[in-house]
Every structure is written in structure tokens, then in C-alpha cells.
Length: 237
Image (cartoon, rainbow, N blue to C red; front, side, top):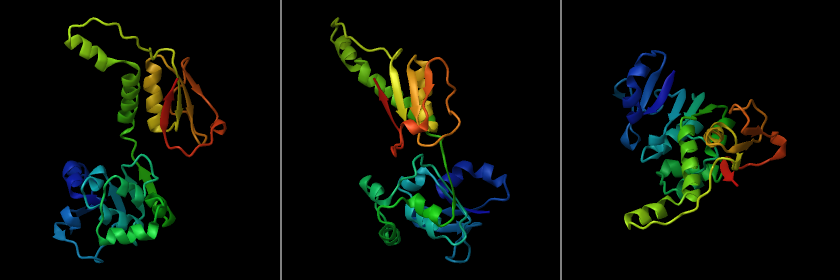
């Protein structure tokens, strides 16, 4: 299988890929230049069958090359992306400050505000995405709630001024959390909240096996109780 891979990612996983002879990398270097088996790639001489979209592709990488191949590549059968949410559009990427070359703007004009990944599915691609960031998202959510409930900054300021002052705070233990969007990321939030003694209720759009083992401090609700198109966010009360 010929797989389109960003050159920095190739450097990171080269040994593992070379141990799998079925994978033949089509490398994308800076500026979108392509190399196959150590030689410059001639357009049309070979087509990728899979496209691996990583964070580096969007962080200053040749995003257009990957997106155009993923949507329009005649031989592409499989696209794997790092994105947890698949509602990414060119409009959203522009809102984050991304800019595109002429080819990228052409694809953007065709797709408009539609999801780029929806366009891939419409072309018959098999689409998979990574949940590797779920643990980090869970920790980030807990940190943000703690920052809201615990006056750490005020305590440190008082300490640096050698001033004794009582700062009331709220305990996480016994609090009740509603996590809307209970896939891998949402369940990682719930798992950590429950470990701190919170009662967690998870809500999702579709029925599925519980991603978080439910104990005395966790609850599950039928997906019919909340029909939402919100991908994931958290509430605590």
C-alpha cells in the first residue's frame, strides 16, 4: 500500500514502517514536494492509496497536498487523521489563521463550509481518526474546572505577600457532572472526575457500549435523553 506521509512524521516512525514491507511511503517534504523511493515524485506517475494526516500537516505543513489527495486522489481508499472531531471545514481552518495556496483555495471553493472529512466519505474513502489526545483532553478539562473552583492564584499572591487569608473553595468530591459527548475524550473527562469523587452522567447521540466502567459514582443515560450535535463539552454543578 502506498501511503502519503509528511516527511517529519516519516523521520519519527521510519523504523516501524520499514519493518512493514507492505507499506510504501510517498513522502511530502516542505513546499509540498513529493518523493517516492528516494526519487522526486512525478505527478500522475504513482498515486497514494492511503493518506496519513497528522498535526504537523496542519502546523505549517503542506495541508493542501494532503487534503486534495484525500478528497480527489483517484486511488485513495483510506484516510487516517489526528483530528478527534471530523467537522473541520476550510472556513474553520481560516478562522484559526491557516492560509492556502491556489490549489487549496480551489478545493475550498468547491467544498464551501462543508466538512472536509464528509467530502472524503462521499468519495468512498474509509476514514479513521485518532483518540490519542483523549487523555490530554481529560486532564485539560479537569485542570480548567479546578482553576475555576480553586483560588490558587489568589492563594499564591497572599503567600508571596506573607499575608494570611482564608480563601473558601469548592470540593470536587460530591459534585455532579454532565458530560455531553461521551466518546473517548468525554469518557476520559468522566473517568478523572469520578476518580476525584464526582458523580458523572454521560450523554451521547448514539447507543454504544459504555466507554467508562460505571460504579457507584458514575451514571449512564440513554442517548434518547439528549439529541445534540455538540461534539463534546463539559458542565459541572
